[in-house]
Image 1 (cartoon, rainbow, N blue to C red):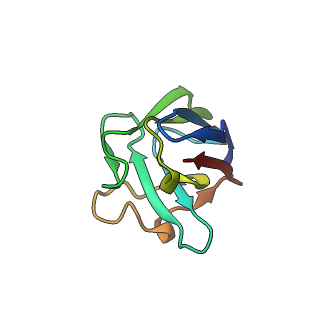
Image 2: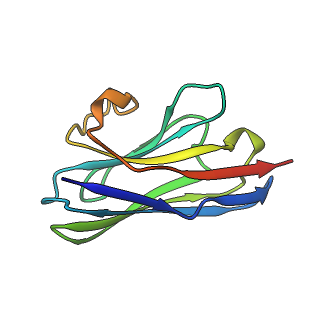
Length: 129
């Protein structure tokens, strides 16, 4: 069983930066793609970014390209830490951010929630104008 715990959320002003972290345990081998999703009040959860197990390939939602960077630190076969560096934040980035893990690593469906087997509990990001 994979366990994911996010941290690093908070409140910032527009133009500011935050870095989210997601610590995983129970992770078996370098087989899971890791992603970040977010859900704003009254909106559906959306994929923000995803990265392959070795960190060689990543994909981003158009709304965050050039501002967000996803990265991964593989500690060993049972643990890794996923990061999301967020710069030039906008009020529209306000949401609950979730870490997720998937055995699917394709480029076509990475934004679909149904592809992700494991989820964290979320961390809140609030950006004020």
